[in-house]
Length: 146
Image (cartoon, rainbow, N blue to C red):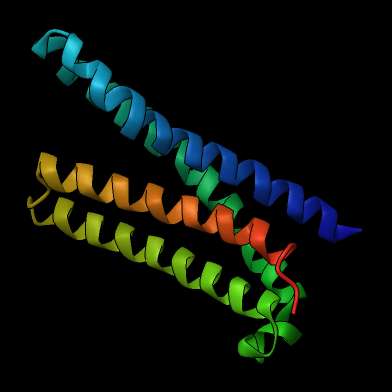
């Protein structure tokens, strides 16, 4: 009974996380160029503050549910190359851990005042790419059997 709840929680959190990144990378990045420079800065700051507040909870739900779901498949994960499901799930986990690594890198850049606009854009695009691959792997896990 717990598994379906975890699965839906994980899915909804993933949608929120990917949707936020999609907005920032695909929509806002180009739309901001049509806004006055002073408004761009204000809007960038407002979006960043709100995104951080919302995403902290979303990420906790996403990773919490993900860890709980992975625990349900610990038998498969003990031999990840024995099945396509285990291999794909392991790849999903590696990509999810890479996203955490991205956030550590982001925190380092912020703390050391090395975060440039180019780096911020790169890291958002990279995380979005990781998330898209994770979604593809999630679907593939249930279609590629063998």
